[in-house]
Image 1: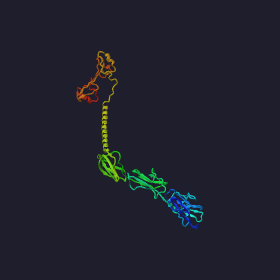
Image 2 (image 1 turned 120 degrees about the horizontal axis):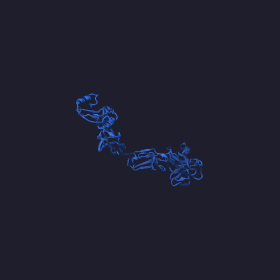
Image 3 (image 1 turned 135 degrees about the vertical axis):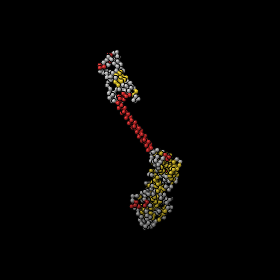
Image 4 (image 1 turned 30 degrees about the horizontal axis):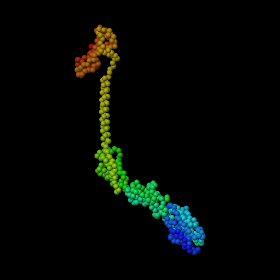
Length: 451
C-alpha cells in the first residue's frame, strides 16, 4: 500500500475491496487518500437563490492504469443499487450540464434553481476495472432560498432606519442587489438600504432584487405629526348675513389626526374636523384657525379671515324703491309737462294774418301832402298804437291785439276813394265796465268801440 496526499485542505480515504466487490471512493476532510483515489468537492455546502445558476466545482483523481468510462452526478448515495444519472432525471432536463471530463474535472452546473432542488449531490465515476465504481462521500449540500425585505415594525419620522434584503441561508456567492421604492429604482446595491434620517416621503412599497430574483413587496409606514394643516370654507364667495357657513380643517398625518380645535382669534370656539355656523351675522366676522394633533405632535393652521356682509335683499329693496320712486316722479312731471304744453298750444295758436297787413306801422302821412296818402296803397293803417289798459273786471292789464288804431287822413281825401282802408280809427275803451261786460258776453262783438 502507498499513501498519497491529495491536498492541504481536503484529503481522501480510499477503501479498496476485492475485484468482485464494489469500490467506493470516500471523501473525508483532512484524511489521507489511499492508493491515489479521491474526489475533492470545492464547496461542501452551497446556498443559492431561487432562479439563480449554481456551479458545483469538483476534481477527482485515480491511479494510473484504470480508464474512466463514465462520470456523472447523482442525488443518491449509491449504496445497494446503481444510482440514476442526474442528466437522465426528467426534473433536471435542460437545466443541468456536466462541465467536467473523464480525467480529473467533475464540475457540474445547474440553472434556474428551484426549491425542489434542495438536496445532497454526489459525484460518481466508473472505470474499466471489473467492479470498479467510485463515489465521493459527503457530497455537496445545496440549499435554496428566496429574498425577503425586513423592515422595522414601528418607524417615526426622524429615526435612522435600515432595510435588509434577507435570505434563509448565507449565500455562497455575494450577489449585487437592487432596491426599488414604488417601482422606482434606488441607488443602493447592497443587501441593506439605509434611510438616515427617515422622513414621511420615504414611506412606500419596497422590494429588493438579485440575479433576476425579486422579493415580495413590503410597505414601510412612517409615522409623523400633522403637516400641511389648512382651513377651507364652504360655500365659497361672499358670505352674507343669515346664511350658513362650514369651515373644514385638512391635514396630513400618520396616524390620522385625532383631535381638532377651532379658534376665533385666541379663543377656542369648537372642536371637530368641521365647524358649522348657522344664521351667521356680522359678529361672526374675524380670523379662524384650526389646530390638529395626534400622538406624534400638533400643528396650527394659517388664519382664515371671514367677512360677513349685509343681506343683499336690503340693498335690493332700497334700489328698487329708489328706482320706482324716481320713475314715479319723472312720470308725474312728464304728464304735467305734456298737459301744460297742450294748454299753451291751444291758447296761443296764431290766427290767420293777412300778408303785409302792417307794412307801414308807425308811419304818419303828411296832412299837407295828399299825394303821400294816395301813394300808400299797401297799408291799411297809418298808425298803430298798442295801448294796455287796466281791466276793472280782472284787475289786470288785458292783452289786446290793438289798443288804439287810428288812421290819420286829410279831410280832403274821400273815404270812398280809399278802398284799402277798412277803419279810419279803431278804439278799445274799457272805461265802462258794463259796456265791457256786454262786449265779452257777446261772441259776435270783436271790438268794443269802432269810431
